[in-house]
Image: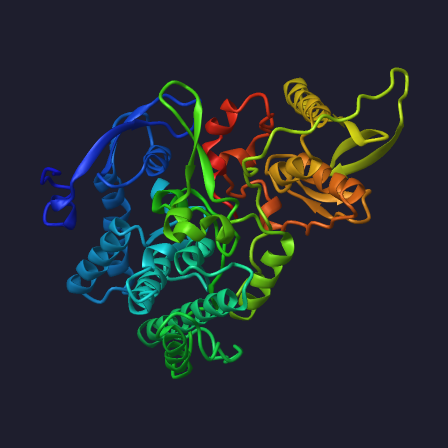
Length: 509
């Protein structure tokens, strides 16, 4: 049990059994002592280590109370929370959501980054219950999230970023195929419920603090029925309640955003509406190796896991996004990098004839004002070699990119498909990034690797078009995972150990 002290006295934390472990924010950081609820996993421990400043011991109750108490006090000062009783209920509600791993604010709130735009994420699988989905509990969490974002934004923000995570995990728990019409109906009903409750909460805040936006009923009719009992009815009731508001406090409230450490803390395995990557994941073993274990979604899906969690093509995600788009206040984020699913041993590729150089191509573009040259060579079997040249960047950075390109060339020769490299490196984030000049098909890139591998997909994967990232995702201050911010070397078939070390790629955006 935790000890009662000035931080957790008279809170639910007093009765929470904790376990102690050692974890690091990333594989290259020193381990630190972490205390967290006894049934939380090592992924959560790593997230806690990353969210807490410094290198000393960290306990989840004290870390959480730091931002919860600040938010409650600020809510009183701003008038969002009308009295001490409302502030106490607000804090109690946030603690309960966090302990149940149902919801939490984004990483910026935990680390105290006042310049970052706040976000609030709801972990959909945590709302699974005996009847299918806890619609009432979810609606209460959405209301609390809107209140929290109003406070975190200083009661000045006109656009809030409240969204959900791990739709794929929820659908697996409901035994629904991600590509089925039933799954899209469930997702649309949850989106309609989110939008309705959030706008009703915005209307309530407008009554107390003043309306800033007129009521605008621009949503379509929600699904008439879903396989989940009571969900369609809850969605319609939420939209009816929102329609009765005299005005709104916010122009936008519901947006799916790229995942950060909050999703890892909550145990979400995918970001937003993304499909699952696979039914298994790789984890490190005590002897330094790796082992393959089922994902949490696979455990929920039971014997149907392999079928329900098989990798999906871009068409499946596009269909799901189309079903949810009418309810969102902003477009869903672009597909993020994801780990490749476990694969069989690669088939040998034909060895090029000595002296035969095949044919090649050269692309010269500028990305964010930096000149970049991509050279490729092909043989009879397909793409065999790539290289990237950067004119303005430092020697260390150029050497890293050269080494990465060499490793990709080696991997292609060993039989690793180009598609796997595209999935790994498209939409990675690190400078230079921004507007692309010189490529008629790609207009923005979040990194040199993002542009290069999307260009390779166009040239060598049947003209596959991957959408441009948004301007926000190309910004220098964009928040991404550690793997999205650095040009990491790919995992080759002969060396599985690095895959276990790239813990940051557990989330699929």
